[in-house]
Amino acid sequence: MIRAESVTPWLRRITLGGDALAGFTADEPAASVRLLIPGEAATDLVIPTWRGNEFLLPDDSKPTIRTFTPRAFDPVALELDVDVVIHGHGPASNWAAAAIVGAPAAVSGPGRGYTVDSSATHFIVAGDESAVPAIRQLVGGLPVHAHARVFVEVTRPDARTQITDHTDALVTWLDLGDDALPGSRLVDAMQDTPINPDTRIWAAGEAASMQRIRRHCFETLRIPRSHCTIRGYWKHGRGGDFEG
Ligand SMILES: Cc1cc2nc3c(=O)[nH]c(=O)nc-3n(C[C@H](O)[C@H](O)[C@H](O)COP(=O)(O)OP(=O)(O)OC[C@H]3O[C@@H](n4cnc5c(N)ncnc54)[C@H](O)[C@@H]3O)c2cc1C
Image 1 (spheres, rainbow, N blue to C red):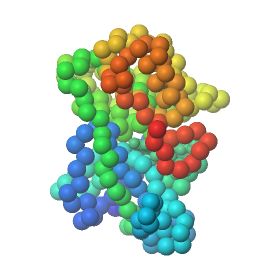
Image 2 (image 1 turned 135 degrees about the horizontal axis):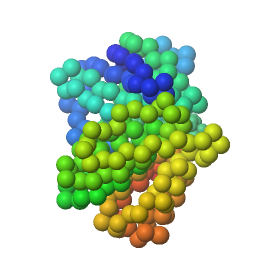
Image 3 (image 1 turned 180 degrees about the horizontal axis):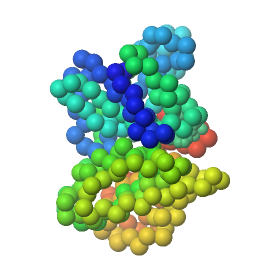
């Protein structure tokens, strides 16, 4: 890790660097990389090995691996940025909050991103803070003629950050109240917004809320599944790498 800086009080940009990044590419928006998070006491990073059907550490324990969006990659400097939400409850969040410049880090990937349909004219893009890096890339890559509604749910007002300068993107910030379930404001926004079936929808955030958005799009609005990419990025009350 060669740099760590705060984008907002709740989002920390970690820059990874090194020759091992040569050849890395993530051409599509909202791709993913997997980060190996060192144990709290670890001074060196121990790389797990493949043992038949999973990666394990030398003592047979499971490595702590979490998924992030490759926010930016500089192929000349060989620097990869990831923006990590500081939510305070998990190893990746704690690691990013206390990131030590010069500490070793391991990353694998990339996983596939989102293919923007360049013929589409209407997009809805929605997500919580964990999806902000992906949303920013995705909206930046929309066709110039496209209209976009963008919903971003944040747990605190000072988590708002620059999302886009796309001329036809209307960004609505949704503040999650103290007692509200994560993703509930996104679900409300999707249910309250008139959506034409030709609209392309991309949404990511807390898994249960994404499941409700999927149901609304598929069962209530009958939007073709091929027009929707709706991904659970994390699960409320459950730690560990998650994708659903
Ligand atoms: C394709 C993909 C891309 C992603 N991109 C990003 C990204 O760019 N930036 C980013 O920050 N996250 C991103 N995520 C989400 C990230 O992988 C999870 O938030 C991850 O669980 C964080 O790990 P942790 O060790 O901090 O917490 P965990 O150990 O996984 O969880 C511990 C506790 O914290 C809660 N928790 C986990 N994540 C959050 C959160 N975001 N907000 C509030 N509570 C949480 C869990 O419910 C659990 O109770 C992405 C996920 C996927 C699948």
